[in-house]
Length: 314
Image (cartoon, rainbow, N blue to C red):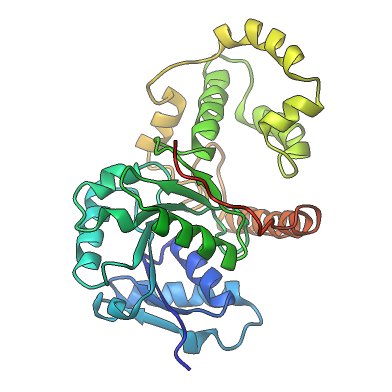
């Protein structure tokens, strides 16, 4: 039997999880990365993610060119956050895939409307923002570009449901979309607290873990306001606090210095903390275990509402 063919371009950290997610739901997946060495790494990591699923290897087709993407009914692009790289990949895809096939870009910051500007068929492009580990989380932000058609957007939303995700429709294409816009404001303030001597990195992390960590898996910041005092209380507090928060439009010094030094977090053991290879692996595993537990809880407490209907952007 011929299964639906899903194309995934880019088999890095997120791309491998995206492949595993499609494979777990029974899809055939054509995965592109340019070198055999990268394919070997990807296959090893996908195997670890698939655990006891035995038939996935017959349904995973690694390729080093785009010829087989002509068979695809849905494509996810997941290459690095670089406009030139993404544009080149999209150019190559458009030479192969049918005009009606949705091309979803896994991006966390580049506006979909920008990617659409040089497309032959911009209406079929959608933003599909995944989160690591992509094969375990419920998270999926879907973003309309200026030219995204209702059909393409609704098809992508339906695909997200088929993958067991809880997709959220971002109806306006703004840099960072929903989650990252809120998160980057928090990251900036955390760095500001370090730079102004309020607290060190470990104290800030402990404080947030023991506060946000209690509620963020069951509700967002707006419901948290409702259940922890209400808008009137928070409005009074904001009036005093907001003028003291950082509103800088430049990268915090502490972050830029780490970036300039080549710090890549647990990837190379350098970041706000230092990591041995064993510690890096332990933190990755600890996070994956937490995601799995939270996902189980959310499946139980917040079953997916399949009756949700999409509206048009306003």
